[in-house]
Image (cartoon, rainbow, N blue to C red; front, side, top):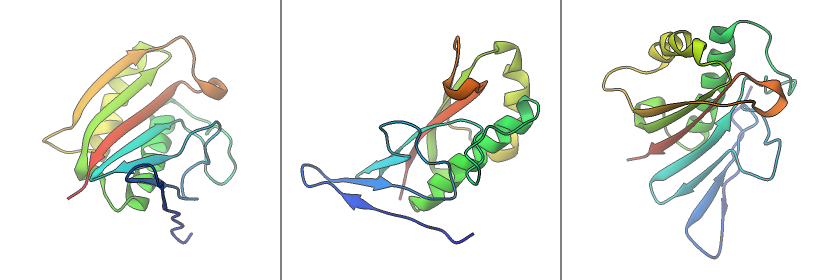
Amino acid sequence: MPLCVHLTTMTTSHRSIIHTERAPAAIGPYSQAVKVGSTVYLSGQTPLDPATGELVVGDIATQTRRVFDNLRAVCEAAGGSFDQIARVGIYLTHLSDFAAVNGVMKEYFHEPYPARSTIGVHELPRGATVEIDAIMVLG
């Protein structure tokens, strides 16, 4: 699938809106990512398949891989990579999934790892069990 990127510069500030069809479309009033200077703020991604808009079926590892694949697509649309991620925020409906999510994260990130927080939440949009957001610094 070809990389589709739409960048829009706001007139009130130096902000660029990042969008790619390789990641799920926003399901609310937000952008997939916003670039301010060399910093890119990536909105939370859930395990939605970008082609169907449906949650992927499978265990927490399968779902977490889909989330990281979605985040990678947005990173690439912004001109970056996971090597430039400075911070990751992970939201889990079951903190018992913490170890499995850590294992998947090691498939996508290498030392030195980004800063991170993991937060247990009651529920997530569309019944997802994991959501991950990130901050990337380009350059």
